[in-house]
Length: 123
Image (cartoon, rainbow, N blue to C red):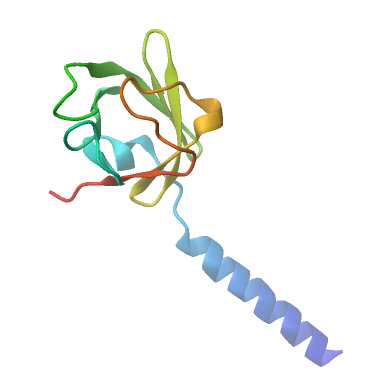
């Protein structure tokens, strides 16, 4: 019986320690950062910039004259970029935005596949 209690307490302690290590992602964690696509953009780097005022811009690369703009929002670990006529959804994982193709529109010049990442650029 004592052995069972020790195992239960050890498991509970481990769960508390691991749970305490994870930090909920907040909008402040993302605001002001620029994220770069893990693959080649349309003639250069494909970047997404999340501005502190809740707006975003994205630029698919040097051969594109289009700059996407709109508002961004975070619900839990899901980031949504909302343009006038389409939206893009990402799962936030540490310094990465992981594209959720099923819940997203299409970009203008590139096909971004489900699970592909945009990584925060270091300053």
